Length: 377
Ligand SMILES: Nc1nc2c(c(=O)[nH]1)N[C@H]1C(S)=C(S)[C@@H](COP(=O)(O)O)O[C@H]1N2
Ligand SMILES: [Mo]
Image (cartoon, rainbow, N blue to C red):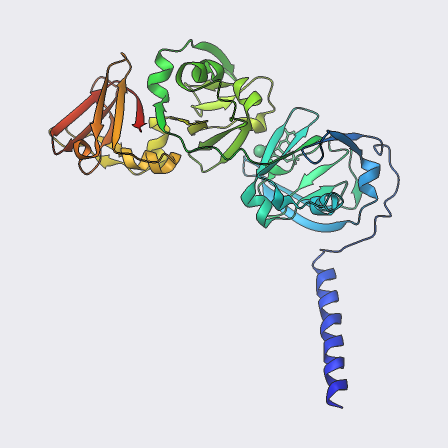
């Protein structure tokens, strides 16, 4: 009798679970999708097998699907809302003995050249739907053949018109050992007019910036990391990054952009860029993200700056015992941990140029027109 009761309870529990799962809309279905006009549209797959290969929408339609309701804000605050139906990326990957967690990042590229890499923390925590039915209807021309939907992640990851998927492994770079200040660096780079809506602003080429201040020949660089003052973080492919500009004046500067990119790829309020072992840091934007401290009165009355240690922490630079401070004119000074004392501050001096100050065991030290700080081995 006891056993029968237990069995009955188990059965009821299972039934309840099934009903709950169905009600949540996370419903697994067979792959009996209706044929449609985009079934032969191809998606290039890179990084799964020795050779790149193509899959069609018809191939994806053979896989079991799920349906999920998802809502996410666009960068302008509007909401994108959809019931997305399609196979999970993991269902697709299962055929190759893989899961999304096997990759460092997965990049989706669209027919309009829009591209975004889904980072490992998202891969570890979220379901990725290769949707081809939205709100119960097949996708239209500007979404087909597949629209990526990642419930609970921002809409910038929801790539429509998918044309290519890159499964990327490795590329875990060494931490940076040098920080270059964008404001100082930009002064000695070619600047060009950049038409931006109703205004004409100044921009520098990312390729000029990297060629002059980082190691453009570092072959370990595949992705370039960027962080903005609103918290946005992104990895851009090296090729995309080097074909772009940084608008250094006007609205939302510093802004990463390029005329050939869809607007969703632009990044406003850039704080820093990590290219290989070089961090490029914008002091002004950085001071909106990091805490501002008072500059000692003996240095400059009534001014604020940001702690050298904060910039290190933010960009992942690992400290050392000796640092080389380089000025725009090429002069440099090497300071030890003891020279730095309790730390140092970066600030804007009376001439409007970036400067560094610290007070350690050897007294007050100042560097004007600060271009870069290098950690010495
Ligand atoms: N193909 C493609 N997909 C894209 C974009 C794009 O420009 N092209 N923009 C992205 C960004 S930045 C956002 S916020 C959302 C906008 O949602 P939508 O699909 O309703 O336009 O789409 C994302 N997917
Ligand atoms: Mo966006």
